[in-house]
Image (tube, rainbow, N blue to C red; front, top):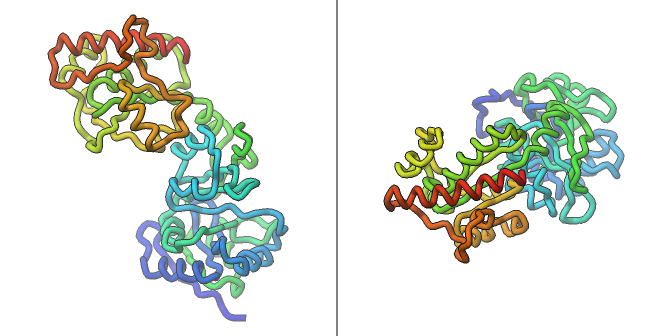
Length: 353
């Protein structure tokens, strides 16, 4: 029996050469012990039948019990899962990378577990492998999952091809496992994340306002709704805003600052952010200012159509034009007019939340 090659790595400043070596071995069908923030795992190429069979036999695990796939980028979840619910995107946004495994509907039928670990070494190895990576805990089935390298290598010396020693894991607990394959939250394993944290994240409503540059209209709407919700003591609702422009990081317009100041709201120091697919998909309600914003959202996230509306649809104003025009560069009187429309619509939105 050949010995396992063991290398030591600094968890914060790992050597790239060792990470590339580990990734190459995985890609070619080998087994590699790697650290994660929870426990040590055995990484293998999910597409290599021999590697997966070897992993099953090594762990003494039932062949009908599938392994979870580990990813290094949130967007990769859609390579493996379909019909992903809003609740899953909320959990990804809050806890990925981190100690959370999501069980979702698989694109190949059935279900699949997906996890994005919060560990530099693990993420780098997974990314460089360039193949789907499974990574169950580095222990014989039935034994305690290893929280340091000595525990991991104890029963696996000579049985895996390569092993990375980075000391004790940071969290010293397994990932929590949540099943969302049928839409409803079902906690299969309460690990590093507690049930209460998971349930609160899923049950918190997300409202997203969108305009062009995220410096005027969407900022007014966001801050006015946040104030209204606070006054009405409505909790478990998070409000945010974004723009469809490429440019991000610009400040709030002076007109917007003045209108919000009259409402007792200060917005100094905040900067615009650009809309992303992830922002849209985690939102329960998306409110845009113009039809062109609606079109832009649907281009990047067509699946949010049923929760996407023009904000002015909620305003009690007899006006066939449902667009709320951009006040940037206009007079303060025009800002006042736009602010009044947004405020009235926002108050009506708060009634349905």
